[in-house]
Image (tube, rainbow, N blue to C red):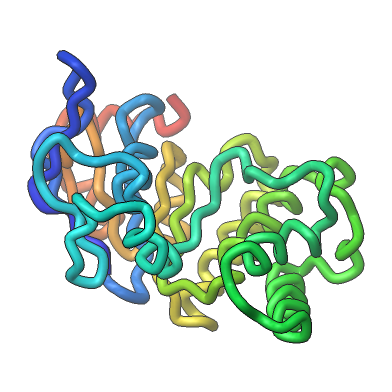
Length: 242
């Protein structure tokens, strides 16, 4: 569904991505692994058309989005839900209002359909009983589940996760990873998982691309990381929390 073809991105003299090629197929979970500040989140922004590459192409369902306008990008973006690292919830809105806001703003749906979609995602995320709660009354893990429910509200084909378990305790992290696995197993969605946490990759990813110094240095099944002779990967496996 998503393809990066020879994508490079430069900010002035700083080269963030160097000739990156990557394919994410429908109904698969692709992890993009690497340390903080290496450009992993930049790849998500490229997939959404929020930034443009210096060179190369970004294709969504075989459509090159590199030169599309904001209006032309809207139907493309509806195919992808995004779960930001900080969740990006509206603090003054309840869980129900957070989930329904973008539906009311962007789609001509009846109130019954909006209510149905919101209840569907509240149930999927295990948030029954919290419909009228404000975000500041929720734990970090519950806020993340709200963000996942909101990302699903447009019925996308792919969900993009930016560091989905960062800062969460082990129990909350497991719940989020279980939810990501259910997206694929129960709904048939694909996902892109940007993370620096190795255990997240082994928990849910079908394949993993390792980003190092702006380049993809590995792209295969997670288990094959242990066969890599690259010194960075060996160091990362030995010190996964660094």
